[in-house]
Length: 126
Length: 110
Image (tube, rainbow over all chains, first blue to last red):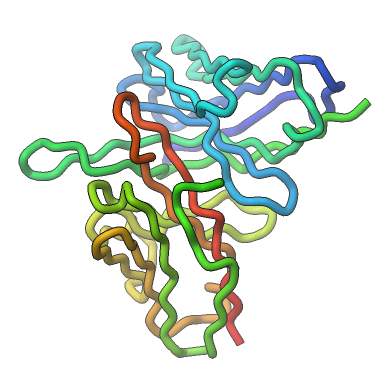
């Protein structure tokens, strides 16, 4: 059974960099996409970005200038950094395994997140 | 603003059927996935693709799609189904896919 666990500081000062790690156990980080997703208090889910085990990344356009996602395959971990944090970045942050699926002709049809971490609350405040 | 639109809240009587909808242009080309989210817990995948349920998800959950609308139907809603439900798909742009979530629907079981 694949398990994901987020970790990192629960409090970040405004203008500083938010850094989180997600440790994957029960399976390899290789051959999969991995995403970071967040939920601000009282709001819905927001996709932040994904990384493929090869290192290919893609980020939410609204966060792209401040986000970096990286992998450490030797430790089976992925990381998120979000620079110039503001109060609007306060949220529960989740990591999730990101699966693409295809139809019988091999055409891409969609994605889903099948395993999620429990989430970690990050508050941006002085 | 989200490219996927959901009703903010829906209610259903215990044991009755409820449908939660998700609208967006990208759904004409791509399938949606659906997540159940309860306070303090990780979101749980309940349906994806053409009505595929992960192992352990009760068969009272089903998915469907028509045009620009994807639907999650719960037949015989139970008290434990009370939760927020989110749809997810890609955006309608070209190039590398960006994933988007609907705004979420709060389901109340009466």
